[in-house]
Length: 115
Image (cartoon, rainbow, N blue to C red; front, side, top):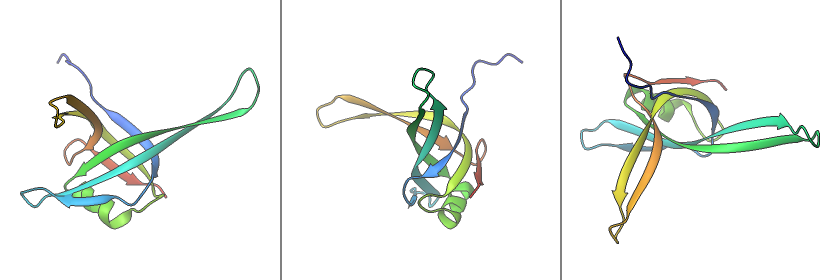
């Protein structure tokens, strides 16, 4: 079987705030949160320790969203697997805006609470 592409995201980080919980028109639960991932390294020139933080907007669907609702809060560390999803929206002036989120669904997603 020939693969046409791979869209997989793996993150380990901390929730920056409590997750936002909502429900779609069919009553399915959805969790939204920002996950911070941190890296550190030693600068080769100065020898100083450096740090960098990236923020990822995450959307979790279905039974995994229930886990987020019941088991997480601000500063919870989680491991997740999902995929990138880009949404196109138009503002009031007709300008296209794009938002990329990490989507963690029931079929393709993994959530593990690590702390």
